[in-house]
Image 1 (tube, one colour):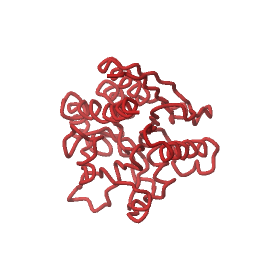
Image 2 (image 1 turned 90 degrees about the vertical axis):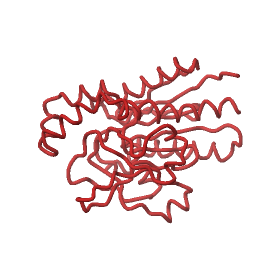
Image 3 (image 1 turned 60 degrees about the horizontal axis):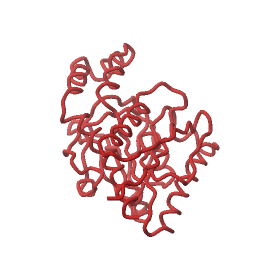
Image 4 (image 1 turned 120 degrees about the horizontal axis):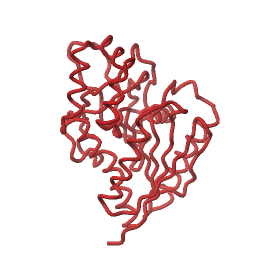
Length: 275
């Protein structure tokens, strides 16, 4: 089999804020390279802080989560360049039959794309959502190759002050987008469930949750005093210790981290070999 090189652009949306996400993404790329004996190279672009944006020469793009409002950046140069890149990827894919470019958008990047394509209502939450939560796949999600090997529901790290509600299914239809996952239904809470994953096109997918999160990074995060206090205040001490204990459960975020982004990379590699 012809093993081609996979060139990945990682877009850092953290705006200089400390985070575990970038480390998680790089770890998955390195592990994927070693386990599959594929020459995976990646470059990091600090978009919000330094205005760095990749060109169209990469095979795959992973755009991270980040802090702040996904609405206040409207019209800012870095956001325009991000949207322009998504347009370039789509234009490339529609004009190339064999070779495709792939993009995976996480959390803040996902919210921006939902706003760009007007697929739902991007709103601020009443309180911060932070922790390890169950996520429910839709029928389309159960069929989607990105979730091949996951359970339903599955568990992932969720960390957000914003969310995307009220899917506009006419806009989904027009775009050819599919809603793949939603927040787990809570029978006792009468709140609309937010959208947790969308396939924007055959090659562009996004998640509200953090598929790159790993137990090591999450543990470091949960043990910070301010994080612990925030979770205990919101959810109670029992929930906090449940989260800590669930980090070692192989059926929870360990599974999610080992399945979703590697499936995305496999698709990009498979496409390179076909092309």
